[in-house]
Image (cartoon, rainbow, N blue to C red; front, top):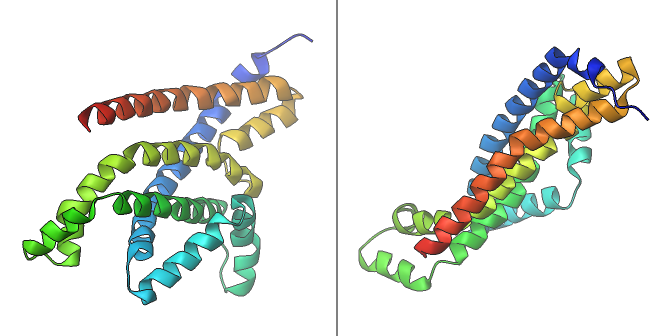
Length: 219
């Protein structure tokens, strides 16, 4: 076959709109997923059963159901149960953010548990409460250990943004589908989408490697 990217270049504006949509949902899901993940992770680590069990149920449910199903449920089923409609962006952001929060929660929990018990003993000897010890001593050390895993989670969130196309949210894959259907050039259209994703993600992946090496040297 003969490759012809002329029709793809002719629709650069559509791809730019899709790239903007991808970056938008990535930013929303990154902030919501990692922030909520911290709250849920602290709940998973807590000894209080009223905090531990709801956090555990949240993690188990969203880790063990597909993100695609979650997005479709929020978009099609939630408006049936509640008296309001939901936009494609909101449905996709909810599905990806909640799923990411469940996985991030386990990263936070594992990072906190990796801190030596002596750190807690030292904090209590200084008269710190549980919250003060967590904020001043435990979390700063745990975050250093969790940073590589959290950056990898960010990469996964970026790639999961393509799932928003299932509810017709305007992002890169959705625009690629549109170009392919209009010009009958699926190979060129999807190749362009893949290249754009690579251009966005390659620097982030390299930054992750650099961060891991620096954190390894500082241990």
